[in-house]
Length: 251
Image (cartoon, rainbow, N blue to C red; front, side):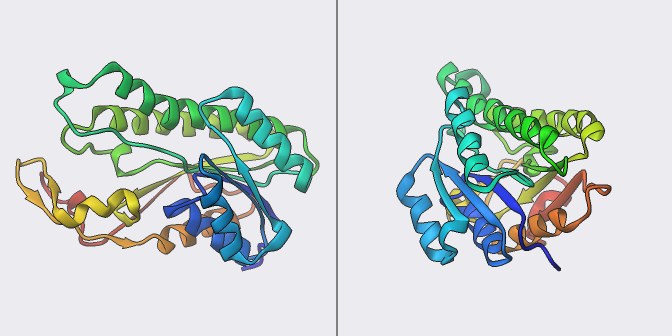
């Protein structure tokens, strides 16, 4: 698989799936802009990769239009183009009954998981549309929750369902400019966000169980596969999940 020379931007690159994807792409010869809120974590990812100047540390707030524009301007100045955007940054909220969710919690999840993805997509679309050769690929981190909710998770689930609509719209609108957009729906990758599963998490039938997880490197390999395809081919949706997790069973 030959992928050397491509240029990528990854949001949420300081930990978890974003970090694993960044490390794999850098090992494959990509130049990668590492975006996220915490500079020290981004710098740790860059240092671990050993990729030198091919790893650009670029702290950014995906909920702020100015910060997002500055992020993409920096990436463009450093590497000259954008071939891949992985919209990975996301957050959840405390599990609670729907009628008890504070508006501030709802808004915070929407700002990161939906508005942030839109803002980054908009900037990537602008660059991919105008660069030469034209085009590129945008991959959105959907989640199993883009299809099936967990109990008491309406803010997160709502945003992930919305990402499916944004993915389809971006895919359709990008056709004229050789821009592909796909979505990767991830189930139980072992990251800091899934650490709570060790103690068990609520199920639809009211029980609590410890759910199996998978290595986050499996997700990174799936991202690499999606981006290895030519731009006349798009993986619109791809689900990668821990094989023993209860997603495909009855609730």
